[in-house]
Image 1 (cartoon, rainbow, N blue to C red):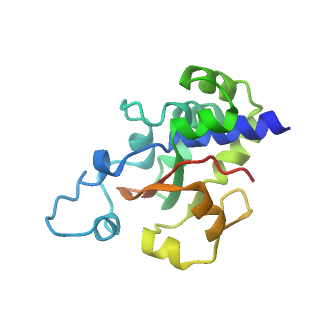
Image 2 (cartoon, one colour; image 1 turned 60 degrees about the vertical axis):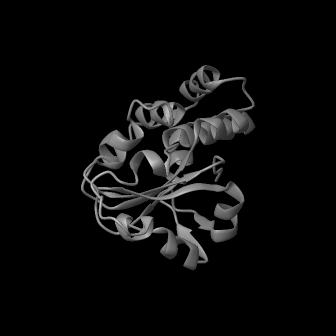
Length: 177
């Protein structure tokens, strides 16, 4: 069970490992506006397109999202806020040596467990960082509550990456339900 949680957390981290530098200006190039203001407006790419970008940031998360069958959900028109763990977060959580081992570990997880972990990184609605930080907790798509303190403990690496169907906030740890 512990290995399952670690692998699931690792998969989520890899999928959500984006940098604000890479995506903050995508479709939102108005000078002088904060990242939060830019994220309030939909970007040009979906959450899936950002996560699946060939930039080496979310390789483990990519593998997890594909294995769990969540590509269509996160590629749809519904608005979501995703707390995306980095590849390094998955490596740390899974206790493996590198990204390749993390991907292999994620691929070895049961689909239902992996899905539960991934959905614990997603909440409904488009929530920019100011909204996220103002709320005491959030109902995640797996049905559980994530508190602001738990999110803060995960380490927020980048915020307000705007997608056409939501917002991505990059975190340094995999959240375990």
